[in-house]
Image (cartoon, helix red, strand yellow):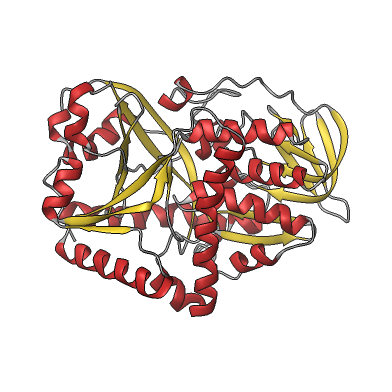
Length: 434
């Protein structure tokens, strides 16, 4: 099943809170006929749009092809959290690549956060609603101890002093729920309106000279010294192809499909909570918790609760309100009778070790994907690093590419049923409190 068409209307954003509050954006015309460019980008999310912007600013000719609308995929549907570090913590990273490379990866992740903020400021992107602060809420005492110990490690070994530890009283005062045992606030993280950020990137890339084409699904990539990227109505001949489709890449590049797995995630937006909002979050921060099937939430600018969570085991979206209301009410039972105004799902991509996959699967082809829920900052950085690599400066891309990657057992054919079995097991552990 092609996830580009499984759950959404062609050429339309999903009926989300983000789409309802999006900044105006004219449609970019589909690709027609033959075209040439230094770089052809497949996918119009953060990775592709950042690559288009940075490559165009370097004077390269750029064509970006998006099947639906820019920001259509995970980039326009996610929780909006601009998190610190890599998807795995630095303890894992040090064991995987050594201390020196771990420091490089930490620095790149810090650069990724700064890049998002800089792009928003430099291009005066309206409606992005940058707000600092992300809390980490722990379900068990053991998780609290680990979280506080890890904050000490980051300060000691990486000079990162932006984390405020919280005990049980502190976390309850912050999020208005008694279910968590403690946690922390990362004041160096932030959260944004994700679709308006994608729209801002698209406008900036277009203004820099990149040619953006919506309604231009890529059907084939013909390899060669000058690759050709084929849509239903045109062909781009280019020097370098940048694959930026993430969970929607499908079977365009089998080597990526064996290492990167699409999964679905879901979010609800309540009606505006008014005065009740302060009982849900006492400060304008975002939150995520320690469950394997993670819950994450924040308040919108008009005081709606935007709550993400739940899981499903199929390409088709389930009953979204039912799926996400269950974990939301576990945290906030007082919202039982609150009206749900929006419910939407989307497809992201994970890797086996939950670290992003940077690779060159073919000559003259670069790919970055598999951000595993940590993509707002890292995808923005990935686009910049791919643009630099295409221009002949690949140092940053090469640092990310050194991360160990493993194929899903069974490759692309069996990855989905095996993931279903694993997710079912971890979901059961969540329910049992392990």
